[in-house]
Image 1 (cartoon, helix red, strand yellow):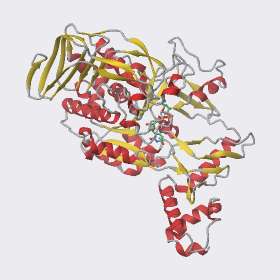
Image 2 (spheres, helix red, strand yellow):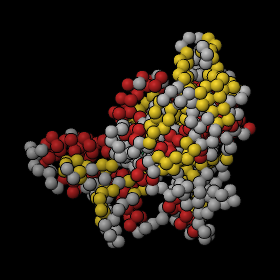
Image 3 (cartoon, helix red, strand yellow):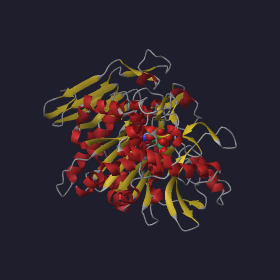
Image 4 (cartoon, helix red, strand yellow):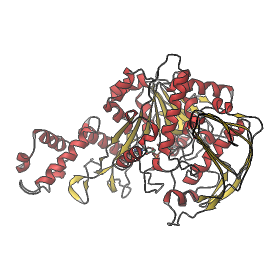
Amino acid sequence: QSNLGLLSPDQIELAKILLENGQSHLFLHWPQLGVSDNEKLSFFDQIARLNSSYPGGLAAYIKTAKELLADSKVGKNPYDGFSPSVPSGENLTFGDENFIEMEKRGVVEARNAAFVLVAGGLGERLGYNGIKVALPRETTTGTCFLQHYIESILALQESSHKIASDGCQRDIPFVIMTSDDTHSRTQELLELNSYFGMKSSQVHLLKQEKVACLDDNDARLALDPHNKYMIQTKPHGHGDVHSLLYSSGLLDKWLGAGLKWVLFFQDTNGLLFNAIPASLGVSATKQYHVNSLAVPRKAKEAIGGITKLTHADGRSMVINVEYNQLDPLLRASGFPDGDVNCETGYSPFPGNINQLIMELGPYKEELQKTGGAIKEFVNPKYKDSTKTSFKSSTRLECMMQDYPKTLPPTARVGFTVMDIWLAYAPVKNNPEDAAKVPKGNPYHSATSGEMAIYRANSLILQKAGVKVEEPVKQVLNGQEVEVWSRITWKPKWGMIFSDIKTKVSGNCEISQKSTMAIKGRNVFIEDLSLDGALIIDSIDDAEVKLGGLIKNNGWTMENVDYKDTSVPEEIRIRGFRFNKMEQLEKKFTQPGKFSLED
Ligand code: UGB
């Protein structure tokens, strides 16, 4: 009571909210007015932030927490009453007629799109000390994930403008969701690199706030163990992206400017942009309100399955069901064998890779109803079977792929399945854990992430008619991987297969020990036989033909142990580095037509 004089009317309101919602314990240790007043005021600054950053404020957070904790205590299954079935979606095969059509359609649509990268997570499983988007996507060129994403968006933008019949030349907006853990380092990375060629006005950073931790089943907020004037907080999950977008006002701006699509993606999938044009084409053709990108998934594989859930009361939704919930759900719903492979050798429930394409209009309408709030969950670690106390504080969490949970059954929610080699190679696991992954399962490490880039590019060129030699098997950081020729290109060289095909002609072959990096736009591979390293950079106005026999000692791969701290972290987590013995490196800085002899 004596502290009331210290507080502004707004702060008194916040105190009332806390007291009315069972949080009086937060003030029990407060000394009288005049003692620790600054700390008390900063406590209210934090409360104000926690209150304003959550849809419905702290009262709503505490109410939901109580409900979810009660459900968790009695072991309530969130899917009670729902029966699972296989949803309908689109299966694409790289390079066939339908795929090529979808890619072309996707490029037309790209100028009506906005991209949203969720990059607020620190990636504890990877154990890398920096932000994940700063990691090299591959070490042949050293291009980091963020640079690759930006260059891909710019390449799509340019291709889209070229074929747009309405002359619309809109810049594609790019939003990055950050958190306190990643915000300043993301900003610095962008500024240091002049936004990797994007206009700074095109990029928007939205920072997510953490949420209050909970000490017990009554949802009493936890005080920070080191500061009794501060609430302990933890990340709320990538689902925050929806409420942040909604409150940012960007959706209205985009609708006003005529945009039609919002594409969400995660921080370290270096193959994602191979899948974007075709799946955007699918969204447009099928008029999907929500399109989830997916890959074939082995039954019981540790990746969520996209599932249609139909409730006894008539409700239904197409949603990602985490793998540990899918199998028991199937067993409880008349499928005694649970999640099993079908005649294709894969589970009929495709694997969610958490890249979502939403149609902007219906998305905005839905957020207007929900404020962007996503169905949350809580995952307390109980001390014992009485489930009365927790080992450590917990908090509510939410996932961006749970967005469809509030949609009406009339919403068109579909998915697009693509080959794993083409679309999905995240970098999530540290070398030690990756080495323990059972044989045949994906490592999802920095090693496998980089090797996947070379494999995808090799397979794409093979499909375009180049004889790329078969890979060799190698063990790097304890993981057996296929090592293909180290082929990379800038997104502007070729974003879609039909464009790439126009850049390749004649009899071309590339040996397994080769490295090829194409950094220019108008570079044509014609009757090339490469056995070594070839690095080509050129300005847009230079047309360069790569042909003839190129043979040199190339770049060899040297094993590096992840424990060897004398090697930079971003290299040693891959288990190898390049030894640049010899290469043919050419830079074309003048307009005109050139060949490798020039
Ligand atoms: N992220 C945030 O931006 N904020 C947060 O608070 C947390 C994360 P993880 P996760 O690809 O196989 C997801 O940690 O959550 C960003 C799907 O839920 O890499 O364990 C973070 O920066 C799962 O269904 O993954 O699992 C990163 O960009 C499956 O699809 C992204 O959110 C799985 O990814 C994902 O965070 C997968």
